[in-house]
Length: 448
Image 1: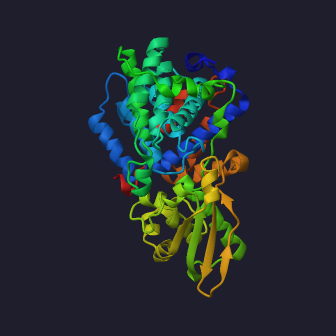
Image 2: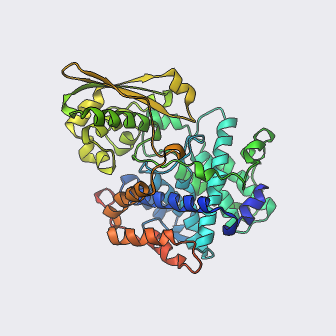
């Protein structure tokens, strides 16, 4: 299918039932992550920034779980960075990054501002965004020499969605895609891996850039051709658009830390279960993984951003607490003396076989040495939540509730989950769903 036709003419009835089910699953997971992220200092700062510098115009939109109105580009920016602030959102192994984090806030911004969307159209746009962004991510990695953040390519999908919502013709749509690719934040991901800060994966900027690109194109602004979409050598990546559904290849994270750290977390937790390890009795931990995972080397994180990008801390916290969730990344957890000692004891080793399998596969194994001299080695492990070892529906629902209920309460979380499950049924009150995800939630101390 031609790209223009896919963007503008794909309809709900064209989408297979498993694809629609996956889209609902992705949105539920993202909303849980967004609820947790809304409590972060990062989210508080970016929402204040949107209020002060992206003021509401004629077409304003409410910010995700905030309720205050800003421009559409401001709402997309704030929503993307709020989700990105809590590193538990879905992703795709070959893009080495994330899609829904930019797509969902962009679709919500258009839905709230334009008032032309129902539940079926909302879910259709989510699918369109995933299909375009996944291919754009693989294409950009194949054609650019540097490893860039997700915002560099998920911005293209957001521009495509803008072109659909604004009903742009073929040439303005092409211009929007070209503007988005040219202005996309092609920031160097490994700089943030080595020095974790709030800049993270660039997806908020990608969402903002894509929405802006569509509006610029609608006004006659022109862009350079989007090579990730038009280069002849990349054409095979787009040949199955509308036939093969890459949204089905998304992974879902069981833990709110960088995906690259999660194979080691799984290996360590499996070892702890088998041997019933007592954390205080552990002397040292060794981890073998791929190069990029070994770059997650911060041992004593002082911020949640550093903790989310720390393989040593992730493994240590999982061993210390027997689980790895939001509580294990709190200020109290960062200052836990035993976790700090275990994290400081971690030694990282690259494994050539694991390097060769990256990015399609991410592996790690762990060795734990006890104070009494006993040494235990784990089996090689991969992260859970890939299509081949998928999280169950129950696990995804439990994750949503664990992240959302402390923020919005059990009642609202229940109503939101039910509304999403029914969102594309005929006659579904889409405005009710929109209000549930855009109305404010209680602020924590971090966002006060």
